[in-house]
Length: 406
Ligand SMILES: C[S@@+](CC[C@H](N)C(=O)[O-])C[C@H]1O[C@@H](n2cnc3c(N)ncnc32)[C@H](O)[C@@H]1O
Image (cartoon, rainbow, N blue to C red; front, side, top):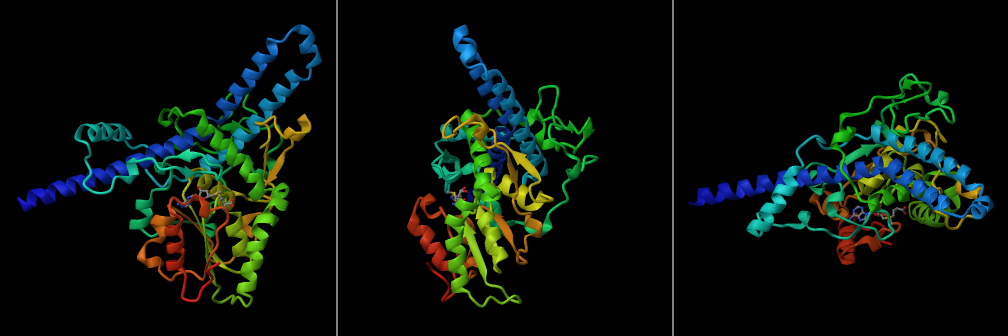
C-alpha cells in the first residue's frame, strides 16, 4: 500500500517536472516567436497607415505627399532592426531542447481541469503571476521566465562574459557589412542571405518556422520595448540617462569599498539586471559582479551584446520608428542608433563577471547563497516584488556579515 502511494507520488513528480519543462519550452518558443514576428507586425503597421493614406481625398494626399516615401523609409528601418534581431536570435543558445513536445501543456491543463489538480504539491508554475518583463508594467506569465527549477537544482545557469563565442558571420565579416546590404529582396527580413548573396550564418533548427507559435501583438510590443531599452543601456545616446541612474550607484559602491583588492575583489549582485549595463559598469570598477535576470526577452538581448558583439558600434538600429509621439520631425524618428557604445569584451571587466538566469527569489533562496555577497545593488527592481519583504529578507540573508545594506 505504502509502495503504491510512493509510486503515485513519483509519477506525479515526474509528470510535474515534464510539464514544467514543456511549459518553459512553450514560453521560450513564444518569446522567440515574438521576436520573429517583429517584421511582420511592423510591416502590418505600415500597411495600415498606407491604407489610411489611400483613403484621403486627393487634395489632402497632395498636402501629405511626403508620406509614401516615409512609408518606404520605415520599411527599410524595419529591415535593419529585423536583421539585428535575427542575428541576435541565431547567437542565442536555448538552454532547453526546443524541439520537444509542448502539447503536453495542453494535455496536462485538460487533465488538471478534469481532475481538479494532478499535483499534490505546489501549483505555482501553472498559475499566472503578474511580472514586469520590461519594467513598464507589462504583465506576463511566470513561465516566460528562465526556469527556476533548472537554476535551483543545478548551480545558477551562468552566461559568462569571458565565454563568448566568435560571431559566425561566414564569408561576410562584420567589417564588410555595409548599409543596405542585408536587404532581402523577397520581402523576408529574416533571409539568411545577404552581402551580395553570401550566406552569413546558418540558421539553427529551433528557429524553424514550423516550431514557431502564433503570438499576440502585445508580445511583439515587448520586442519593440527591448529595442528602445537598448538605447538606455548600450548607446551613446543613453549616456545621460545612465549617468542619472547608474552613476550614484557606482559612486556609492566606490565610497563603500574604497580599497578594492585586485587579488580578491569584493563581489556584487545585481538582481533584475535588465540588459546588463549596470552589472558591466560595476564589474569595470573592480567588483566580481553577477547580474540576475529572469526575462528571456532581456537575456536573449543582453547575452548577444555581452557575448557576441565584436566591436563597439557594430550594429545600427532604429528604435524610434514605431512611435509618432515625442518626435519633432521625421528625421528624429528615423535617427539611427549605433550599439554597443562600448565593446563589452574589451571594456576592462573584472574576472568573474556573469549573468545568472532565473527568478531572484528562487535562485538566491538557495542555502549556498547565504552570506555569499559583499553587496547587493538594485536599480528599478525592488518594485517588481510581489512581496517586498521577501526580497529584503533574501537580500539580508545573502549578504555577508557586516556587508552593505543600503
Ligand atoms: C524595471 S526593470 C529594470 C532593469 C534594470 N535594472 C535597469 O535599470 O534597466 C526590472 C527588471 O527586473 C526583472 N525582474 C523582475 N522580477 C524578477 C525576478 N523575480 N527575478 C529576476 N529578475 C526579475 C525584469 O525582468 C526586469 O528586467
